[in-house]
Image 1 (cartoon, one colour):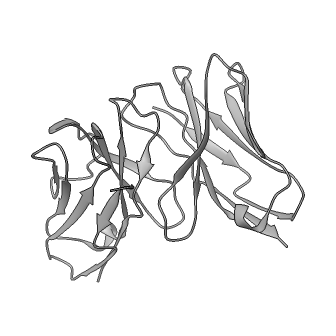
Image 2 (cartoon, helix red, strand yellow; image 1 turned 180 degrees about the vertical axis):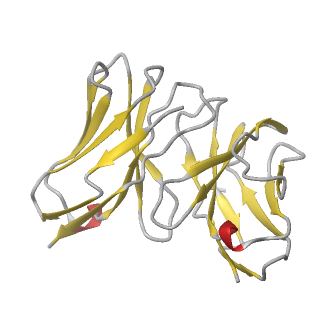
Length: 112
Length: 114
């Protein structure tokens, strides 16, 4: 089965700084790599995803980079804002697999 | 509706009591998933429906857990004889197609067993 690890488990940055969260996985069959953001009292929300035929994807202030050889992918948030404060989860998965395996989460705090 | 709706938002149950948690997915969404999220952890898969068919229930922790989606729309997760270790947030998600791409999660039901 998939073994998923996220680092760091907590991250505190000053507003305007960049934040990077890394996700490592073990299942070489994984080919879909999403990142979810979960705010207090809400369900996870998909913020960006990438498939294994692409190395990088960017959407405004957020980006995801994939190193499939090393089995890790990272979430990059630039120009962080207080509203970016949340818990972020990665969930590397074989595409069309029912069982998405989430990491334990990274709590990001952006200080104003 | 515009999103996935779950009810109740909070449920307190006495140990041994049966509970039923409801999920209203986005209209027209084929796939429906249930996840369990313990405090401070990531969501863990429980079960998956494609329309009314329960195609995967490998994540259900015991035979006290039962899920149904009889008409391919609303789903109910039932937990019989609740125990303290069942305390968690139960999340429902739906997606338009028969894949895990583009999940939309509800806000969850927080179950506390006392």
